[in-house]
Length: 124
Image (cartoon, rainbow, N blue to C red; front, side, top):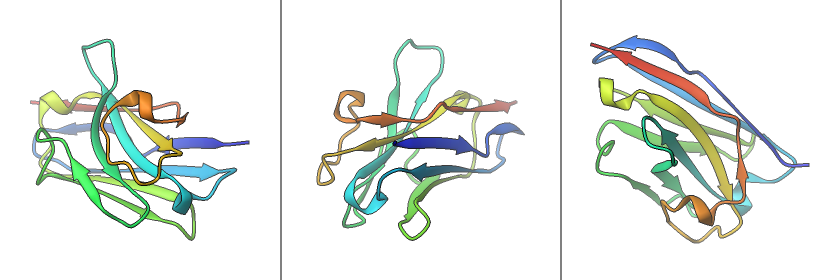
């Protein structure tokens, strides 16, 4: 049974930092691509960071230089380090896993498993 559980969200002031975690079970992170998505005011999930099996990373321009995705395959844990947070970063953040381990993609349709989300709120 595949399970992804996010944690680490909260409320911070503009310019602050948070580190999100995604604990996985029922599968090996090393065999999947992993990604972080977020959903704010829009009614769909926006891909913001992806890491594939060989460790290659990709970021949406909205977070590039501020956020860092990483994973620990030994513990099946995915991380998102968030720095220089802005009010527009306010959203529900989701962890996702994709069977296409080779594919760097921000399309939510390419991912197979999802966590329940963790809320991040950034105030001015």
